[in-house]
Length: 463
Ligand code: C2O
Ligand code: CU
Ligand code: CU
Image 1 (tube, rainbow, N blue to C red):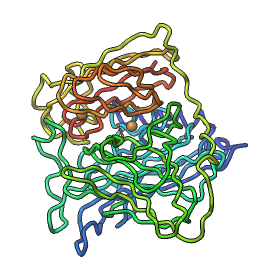
Image 2: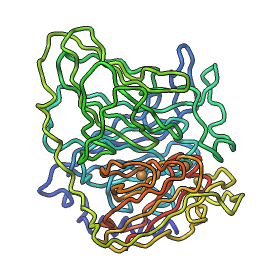
Image 3: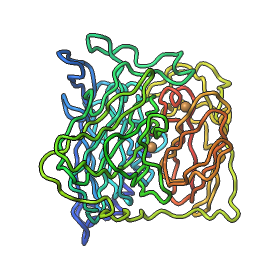
């Protein structure tokens, strides 16, 4: 695709929306968050400065972007680096031209250029953003931020904590080492050496005793599947991957039965702080050889005396319900790549080889060489996507622009909550159902970024 085609598309878009003021006539005024992609320095390890990272604000983790359901958002992304980029808003059901996938929905943003993303988020919930160009390096270097879309009505929590969980691959001096390895890309992905929460070892915060806290947890790592559980408080999972849960998700209180939160996934948890001052609530992770604190919330002050039952279920997002009476089934096989090396043929980087494919077609996810749509869905139809894992590795499979329900598996009882990212287990066949209600070319890939960049990617077209 050529740059001028994208220009034409965005000009047409602007004309459709009536331009400037007319776009928002009668509605709420837009929320604007300028983002600048640039080098940054971080204090990830005590006494050590980590160089060469990329952030939206210099020398700080990417900010939590707060938008409002139904209120237009304007997000100018300025590229202040020497390489190309493009920003993707993970989980948001927005027009295809704003989805941030190079060559598929826009031309990559060049050094010194700014691309203005404009959309109105239809759904409330916890989402996130990351580049979809040079995805492996830019994400590994720190460009993964959380996006909160607030409900139109305040659900009534006393406070909120946002936890951005991810790793960094650093040496003892706090400097980056190889961001990925061929060995990792061919297997389960390359893990970081330093686990972090909001760019810290452990996130610590104070909350009033007996108050109600909303915890928004996002797994933005390129590889790690988190095994999470809580200690010290009553709680309830209220939303999963952005959307209020229709089917209960067990609140995990034991390292033996943790919740799996895989790359790209989010959960919203309602917690009731202990009534006694000084008591802690902990978000814990199971890690090789033991467990680890991720976040510690301390109860302070007098007992607020609140009850979890005071929080009504979150209002449902306006999602279309799949009609399962007679759906068409489309099968996708996730497995080895027939191709091997992949030339570096675009502005968004490839790792140079492929190990993976969808239906035997490898695509480097954000490379120029397209493979054509893996499937064509008609607007409004319900389709079951049958995801067949032919590999011994786990794959968090993510679909842009559409929301789906996992409905059955040959391996386990699935919890059929609406989502945009589903973890596919070893040898699993997982059926997911969706209504194709958003036109465009939607990227469909594994969110272990080394898998995505070595072939486990493609796109689905909705016409
Ligand atoms: Cu979170 Cu295609 O991305
Ligand atoms: Cu996405
Ligand atoms: Cu994968």
